[in-house]
Amino acid sequence: MSKSKVLILILVLVFLATGFYFKNNILSLYNNTVKNLPTFNKTDLGNVVNEIKKEIFSPPPLNIGGQRNEAVLIKSKIIAETNIQRYNNGNLPPLIENTKLYLAAKAKADDMFKKQYFEHISPSGVDPGTLVKSFSYDYIVSGENLILGNFEDEKDVVGHWMASPGHRANILNNRFVEIGVAVVKGIYEGQTVWIGVQEFGLPLSSCPEQDINLKNQIGENKNILDQLSLQIDAKKNEIENTNQKSSKYNFLVNEYNQLIAKYNPLNDQTKNLILQYNNQVNNFNNCVVGE
Image (cartoon, rainbow, N blue to C red; front, side, top):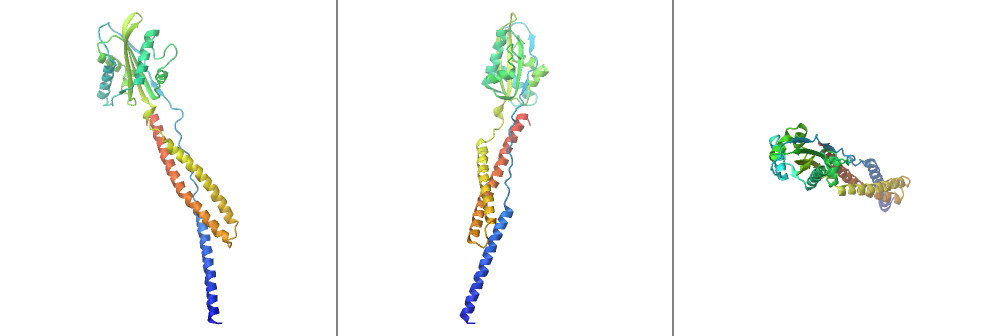
């Protein structure tokens, strides 16, 4: 055999060997990709507490009587005396005056004089929770203290509340962060008296809200992943039904790997977003239940 024929034969063998290696290498890549394809972790988004258990603390109203005098009571001093008691009994943070709670307290005092009752629930059935909500105060925990009589000053008013276990508990409740106070003078059952109302609250807004944009991004990512998953399954099926020796086979494998390259990082990103969102939900739920 001539040298030229030997050379041609060697080239043919090299070409065939190279082609065989290339094909097997692509097939190996395809097989590995299929083997390592992660299944999307369909972790459910955490659920926010749907039915928030709203607590209302309303101890029996205090009617202390007392002789009529010329004392003038001011709501800001009632709040100041209340916060002094919180500081002296556990170093609790001061309550912040809330306009909505003040309006609710003022409405309550006026209504009791107008309809001549002294109860937490009005003759028309309005309880303390319904009252503050009517002034757009959405709460998690609420409380109401009532007192009627004549007093020396604001310290005297708060002192009577502090001497009553239920009213004291409201003043020292560490979940309350806001307060509204009304002190109104009027005629009750033929006597000139003061009625004092304290409305306490922990607003729903004090609990951290979930990022709606984060939730929307998770939804968008899931839709994309679902579409990619369908394309991947279809492409895999097409590959498995294609002759490995055909030129189309390597082309399909390449397309398949490109889909995987899109799927994997988006899948990982979505898992992280779900973890972030579920942490936000847990923080909100813990805040609602007071943990």
